[in-house]
Length: 202
Ligand code: URA
Image 1: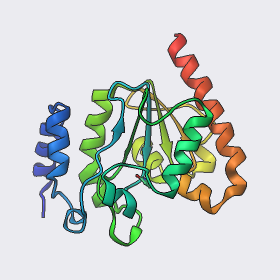
Image 2: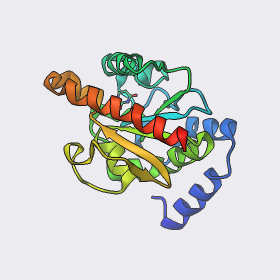
Image 3: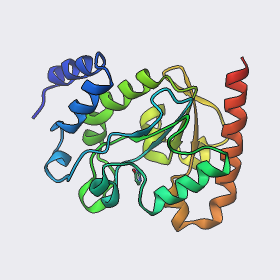
Image 4: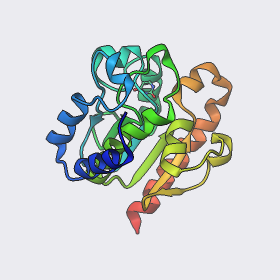
């Protein structure tokens, strides 16, 4: 068991790391039980000085096998979502997850797992300094906004996470199960573009 003091010390150390140290620290992480079952960690992909940061939930089995976020079915949908607003995963966009290891059995990340992994996402955000964060689904929205409101309630507004504008939309995996909500996600993507333009023009 990791004590609260150890957690604070570990988090403080992570907040000093450069990209290389951070990547290595994630690759070697054993801060929660997920480390025992993973094939590899899934750090993130994209442009390290991107304006756009997309945050998902946790790697699935395909991501665990490939080491890259959002490469399975929901990743293909995310790629289509990005393309619809003239973005792609390598340019001006960074993509990562709340949790860097695949939760065995695809369970939602548990609170202790998300808490153990939080310093990594926090440091990624500080290093990237995105102009807008898009939280994909409830896990990311809840962690980044410290709330437990539903996506239905949170979408359509500009929130802030540590001073950075943040908008919320449904997770692509949810959208695969509930295609009737595609129009809402399209609205959210248009709202994201408008928000980005507003942020850039000030
Ligand atoms: N779902 C996520 O939330 N993240 C991934 O990387 C893949 C699927």
